[in-house]
Length: 139
Image 1: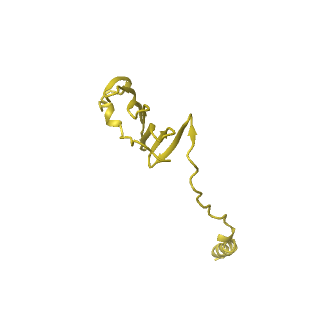
Image 2: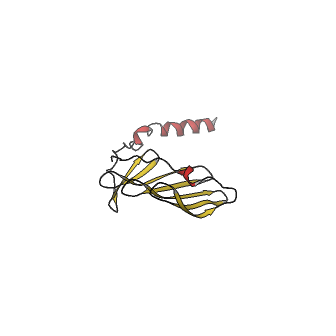
Image 3: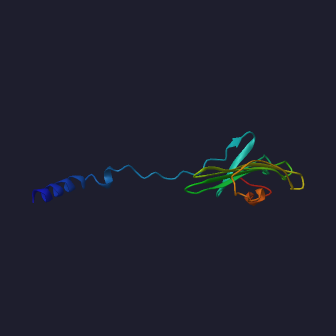
């Protein structure tokens, strides 16, 4: 009986201090204006980060995926005319490095050179990691 009396007493002491003593719930502030890094504005749309020049042309496009046991990060670079110039792909797994590739493309979009590391059995073509870039992005 004394144990239940103690529990009731403890509960009665904490009830008045309930929600009134809790800190207020923070409100969400509007997103800050896009940052400018090296003359390029940084814009985020969903899971894709764009770095665009003063005319709104995409110069870099970053995207990736995160799973419980691995990480994929892809960076695509574009020239001033909007043509794909290069791509960097990095993927790690629970056992370490899976991909660390760099590819360069010519003016027609053909893969010219691929360098880096591929784990044994990883045969996905470099183009399979690319996402289409919009012509212009408004920040």
